[in-house]
Length: 116
Image (cartoon, rainbow, N blue to C red; front, side):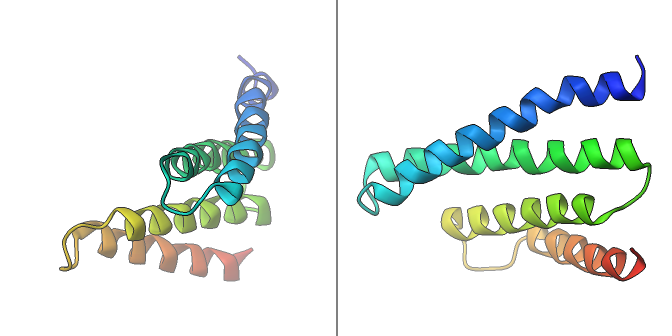
């Protein structure tokens, strides 16, 4: 499979993730805060945004064979989604290994941003 074939295979995931994120995001915005509809549509929004951000970053990385602004934007979006989800779902007050991993990930993205 050629590189453009891989990108063509990933593109529907990216588009579908974006459309589903828009739809579920609007539902989450208009539902009463804390209601079951708000929580379910918000969770669906996060999953759709995960798919959209990571597929977009992957497609651009495959297309350009480098770390471009779009790759950084997709990875930063992934980072923000992960941190937001961890903030909402956090149960224990003490730091977790995932907090350290996220800090290292954010630091690496910041350093990559200076490189591009």
